[in-house]
Image 1 (cartoon, helix red, strand yellow):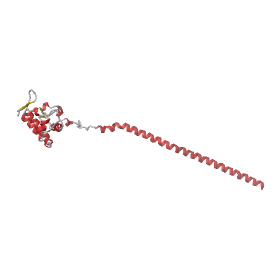
Image 2 (cartoon, rainbow, N blue to C red; image 1 turned 180 degrees about the horizontal axis):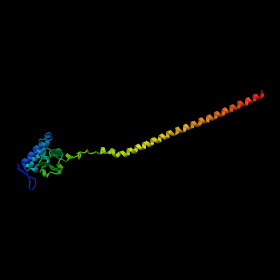
Image 3 (cartoon, rainbow, N blue to C red; image 1 turned 60 degrees about the horizontal axis):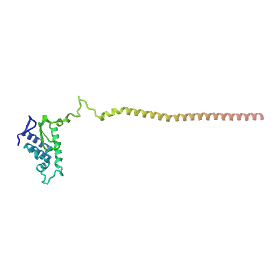
Image 4 (tube, rainbow, N blue to C red; image 1 turned 45 degrees about the vertical axis):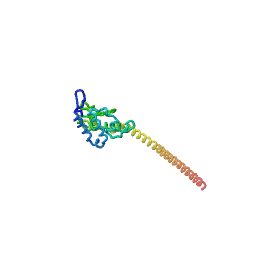
Length: 219
């Protein structure tokens, strides 16, 4: 087994450090619960450490790491590709949850050959980006869009309430107006009736007076 793996022109990583990093990953709950994913990662790392990267292909991974039969055909059986995708996602999750890791094992899409990187060479995407998101600044509670929306809707609600009030007042006036007219009509009718009654009484009095005068003359 190779004692060290070159990382760049001036930097190498000791095999023992890579093996220790591998063991740290394989002992996590997620990898312990997935023996095939653990076997996949162990196989590609060990083959890379012994300089046998040319053997790391879908067919050999399926046969030697996952125990596929000799008739395994990666063209018709995508299980290795699917498992490789899960492995990459699980590695990303592991490094987000373990930001103090010093040696990183990376397997980029399109290849099953892993790369070994030091912390200083890891891309920013591997850093725990979500640790400080959604935290209030200066002790203030961040206002969400749902909280600020009612404030923007207040002028519209006030305008709607004002229109409703004007409509109610108009309806009230329209209802009151016929009542006033009806009252006036009743009053006029009552006055006319009283006037007619007065004329009838005057006529009756004149008739009685004429009758009285006639009877006086006869007497």
